[in-house]
Length: 148
Image (tube, rainbow, N blue to C red; front, side, top):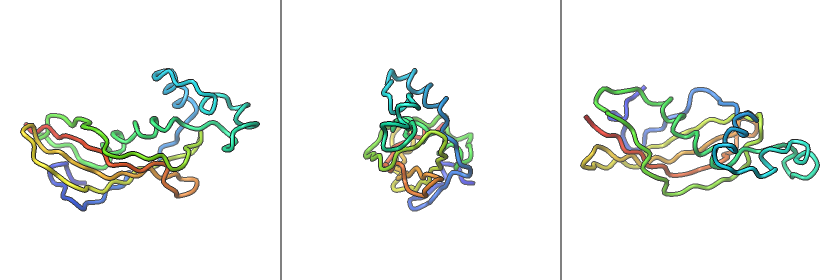
């Protein structure tokens, strides 16, 4: 496993294990964000009215799991003081993440730019559904590695 400093444009990194997105995670995200739409929380109503037949995760819950996933595909380095979310250039939600499904991220390093504080990594990421193999989301994420 490489450290951030050892990465090059074109490197592909895949999260090693699937992560189950549980209803409890969805409930906690709703509580933290105040997004209480029934498609996320009301199982009975979803069985009757939702085209998905069950509750689904908030799109931004899936996106917010990206830093955790990225942390699982790189090794730590004493040369890096911290890694900071720098932004998102593009984000698309393609498929719903149903409660109980599992996801896994795959990353491709698109670009590395020197900045006064360290290195800026532009990374194309996709979040794959275990149930279908389809991407739930795709995006271009920016992370700043603050070099000591």
